[in-house]
Amino acid sequence: MNPSKTSRLPEPAADERAHSDRLLQHLREQIAARGPMPFSQYMERCLYAPGLGYYSAGKTKFGEAGDFVTAPELGDLFARCIAQLMQPVFAVLGDEADFLELGGGSGAFAEAVLLALIAGGVLPRRYLILEPSADLRERQRERLSAALPADVFARVAWIDRPPEESWRGVLFANEVIDALPTTRFMMRHGEVYEEHIALDGDGRLLRVDRPADALVAGAVRHVERDLGREFDDGYRSEILPQLPYWIQAIAGSLEVGLMLFIDYGYVRREFYLPERQDGTLMAHYRHRAHSDPLYLPGLNDLTASVDFTALAEAGNSAGFGVAAYVPQAQFLIAAGLQQVFEQAYEHAADDVVRYDLAQQVKKLTLPDQMGERFQAMLFARGMPALPVPEALLDADQGERL
Image: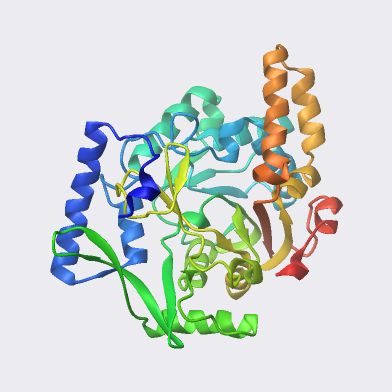
């Protein structure tokens, strides 16, 4: 570990360090028994190991008390825009349409979007939350049961795996792709290597590179062909060779409807810029970003930016068409942010609430905040006519993919 990368971070409490040490011991035992662990597997353990991973343990993750703030945590405007966009979609799809949210976070989005849909007079048959964390499920359940009318809360259900039977409706994922366990690759003498996590002589974690298997190497060569150039020697970055299989698994049974992904990332040629020599991997600890994924495993959120070209390819291979690809600011404006803001502003209780609403808009839309860094990708299947605003289709930047 490079101390300079982490010296400015807050010191963890004793119980936090003990928690990280338990995960570290689990990782050491696995590596000692099976040899160096692919980085993707290390990331998966750090985020999702039962009872030990970042998302599966009891620590607060979201909001001011956690490690990062997602768009739904800023307030209701984001979710109200999504609700306004989806109301005509549910009206067209009918009474049998469901809403599936991947990873429910604190439950803030589900609460706000369902309340907005109630106000709009159109509700999904079921609001499904695919949430792997038992701790987060319980927090979501408590929040929603307190916030929603009983008959609406009765429509909410938590599921362990994607629906197996065919369904119609909307699948929504905000900041989900960036948390998929990513493969790290590097180039050496024209050959593809995969980053692994090993142990040094003192039992400390370290990164080592090993020749990539056919799946990883094939995914990297596909990107090189698409870019029309080979990666330089020593170039290191991230790739999700499993993304087409993941999309098929989570959305293969969605026969008629839309998928909406919002995340931070780039089109492929911007993701793999020659000067971006060490990829996009970041760790987040108490609202501070750093670049050492080996620091305090289990206490940091690990993320990598999204290659939206790869996401489009994966959606296409699963039978979906890209309906729109736009920066978050343009997406929210097309979805009616101005109207949603004005309604909320008009009904605000005091100047403090009005100030908060203005701050929400700034954070969601300004280029140096979330407006340009985050992108929205809307997929459709089985819908000849899309009941979405013309402004959204006009703003489409799909040609950049």
